[in-house]
Length: 314
Image (cartoon, rainbow, N blue to C red):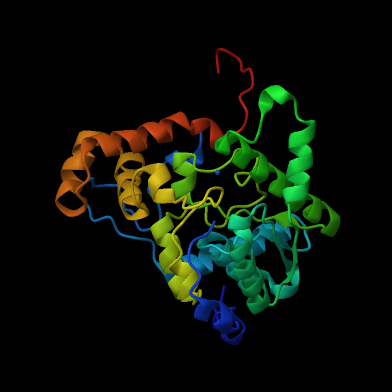
């Protein structure tokens, strides 16, 4: 693939959002095997090099183009949250396929999501993609009204958040079915390795262009494609509760999480060895490392297909 041209963003369309200073936004597996982009995988003491943003830009665009072509699809559907991952995904899809072949869905479900929905609309306009905003609160309220009382959705933020994520994916697949497109997921490797996504919600997709990249790699890729700074600066959040932040949910910032996962998952170091290596630079204790790796192991079911009976001899 030839070198990519300028950013897909039309900067003038985003001046108002940038000036407003909006902050905050936002659920056997090949993910666990082998070195990632920028990792040699041969030496546990080797530097934790990040992926090369320019190379990843080419790689991801080629992947999107090839996947859509192989499926004989007419483009992709991207759920736009106004956050970093969905913005990078949509921008690269535009580079790969052209804006006319990318459709954005903006799916707020509460007042917390309103400013992020406006950001997503501005970003979609800047990318030149067709998009619609669907307010899910009436659908969610009706869903809660018909669900059995024993499964109350209103007193459990995890349960309700998962339900909302699955309603969003239902709308995304409705759009994909109606337009002959693929659902383009936005999850990154950090989220997937920790199970920080909803199974059959934001974890469901036909392709995951950022699925091999850690969150810190996605930030570097965002700089490469000139994602607006107000998006890059938003604290990562699932966006279901006021003040909710990924760092608080996961117990560490992504800069720390990614280093732990690179060493523990990609290179197979034990928690003590990881903590010893990172303590001097990240002040990470063995308990935090152990918690992150335990979460990785406990969420393996989110990264693979459903289990089926197999021949005992296999």
